[in-house]
Image (cartoon, rainbow, N blue to C red; front, side, top):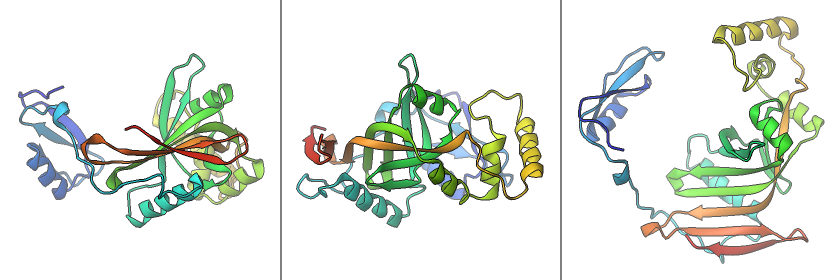
Length: 259
C-alpha cells in the first residue's frame, strides 16, 4: 500500500533522537524533534513507499539437525543465552497466541519468566481476555522473534496454571508498584478514563501499603510444549527450520521442515 505523495503526516513517539531523524531522512522521512517526551513529533512522507519493496536477505547463520541439542530445552537455552549476550531489546518478550470460544485467533506480547524441562512460564491476570480464553481452550502458541539474530522460536502445547506457591513466590519478587498494579487493573475491561485506574491504584496503596498480597485473580501459567521449532533465516528465503516433536514416552523426535 503506497503512501501518498501529498505530504501526509503521521505520528511517531517523541523519543526519536537525531539518530532516528537521520535514519528517517535516509528513507525520505523527516521528523521534527521535541524535548517533551510526552508529546508526539511529525514524520512527513515525501515520496511513494511500497510495502512490497521492503525486504531483507538473511545471511547471519545456519542451523542443521545434526548440530542442535537432543533436548529442545537445551537448544532453547543456548539460543536464549545468545540473545541476551547480543544485548537484544527484551529478549524475553514473546507473542502468546490463544483462541476465542468461537475459534478466532488472538495474540499479544507477554514476558517469559521461566523456562525449564517442565515448560515455559508467564504471569498475568486470570480474568483477562487471555485468561478467559485459556480457561475455555487450554492450548497456546508462543513465538520468540529475535530479528537481530535472524531467529524465531515457535512453541505449541497445553497451558496449565502453575501452583499457588509458585505464583506467590514470583508475585512477591516484583516491584511494589507492579504488585499494586495487579490489584488496580481489571485487565481487558473497558474503563472510562485513566484517572479511574490511577484512583484504584491509590486506594489499594492506602489499603496495603508496601506489602500487598497476591490477588486471587493473578498468577502464572506454564505452556507444556508438544512441539518446538527453531527457525534460522537463510539467503534466498531458503530458511533452516528444525522442529522437535514430543513422543508418547517423553522423548523428542527431530525433523527438518521445508522453508
